[in-house]
Image (cartoon, one colour):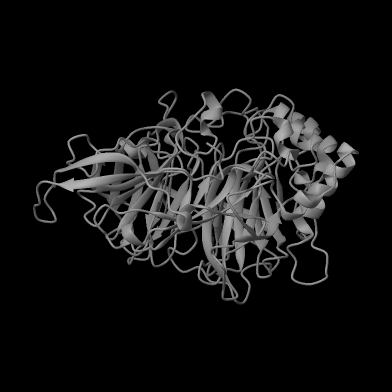
Length: 592
């Protein structure tokens, strides 16, 4: 099934044969059926800001207008520069290919090579770290960390951090998700560890809902666990979460919602805290869990991405898959992603091969309203080729206008094998993933307005950066998870860029973001047993860390914290007056 053709949306049709009070379990019979296609729902595809019915001929508007390429390397570099950046501007000023570099203080230790680069020589000697306008003030390494972090501030004045660790037991001091007391930023201190099934490895699903004071996660062991969701109460003392429920949703007997077997990986809350959404890439499935009663959560909807069910094996099975997501304030719109993975390097420059990676905007009104047999409606798609393995989204307002921050996990050639990086470079495409800002003022015609590319992303620099990565595969230079200061009035974007460390950007002019600070921690000489960095082609003694989790900004303190997989939890303080801006704020629960 082609990615631009939604085809059958598989919904779950409900037939009730018993009804009982709200807090009691209900029994239903459900039938999986293909939903009839509706042209208004599924036949619109957005390409670089242009709407076309049922067609997609490439990643950008300008790219499809280019003449036949004869001078391969030169022309394809122009493809990336012109098509990616030349048309999004709102005036005649040229938009830079990469974001302007941060201006560092005299006491900083700035990058010695390209923006985002850790040169091969520094890796070999044992990387000592870089910092620019950010300094380390507190740390809790523990057993390390893996993919996600969350934050909550309780009524007693405590600030608490939560993060995942790998589903391993070898050499572990503590299993599960550490709870870190961050009330005193100079002394992050573990207070307890959460060890229910989902918390043993929540992968990317660990999220807190500020309004209802609930911490949630799904069973995502090693990225594909099982149907369980775990919810904890944070309201009394966030340092000691209280278990509300650990439940396998979607049981075959209908006792925990519609009988669909879901597999945890990603997850996020609707802002009202009544619905927890999950993404199961291995199944190409998104699903919604009714968490109104967190002691008895129930699966209420599940649907496939427009691509349809998995068609390949191994990594190719993830082409067209689900992943991360976010929900509008009123709960009626979902900003979901569809993973695209190029099957062949030639696909990047072949206009006959459609883009598959990008943004899906869904109408979730029926789920939010708890309509019987709820259906989702696809409002629009925006797909591109200069990134892959779509990761997650953040709906924001910048100067009153709505945007989506979108983050990829894979470069143009794929997730990151040496061959994929080389193929992207040869095609004149960025070899590493990045964040981008998408204008959704017209939700039926979303449009990319800027990309947060560093100098390492520029294909013209491939010869300088690829030697740094000899022997490494998977994630190297590039994005994974980002956060803003305030979704309702965003001024600042902070991202984990794996080997490029933690990067902070001024996004007050969304068409021209600029870097203001970065921190790339020193490499560790011993692996952390709770890290997923320890793998073939991954951790190297003294090499740069994987900084990939959500970043948590605090305008009142002038700090941020996050986790890097080998270094653990890091508390950083901004310096030289670069942040917060006068109009920056960090209300609880509005960073991601």
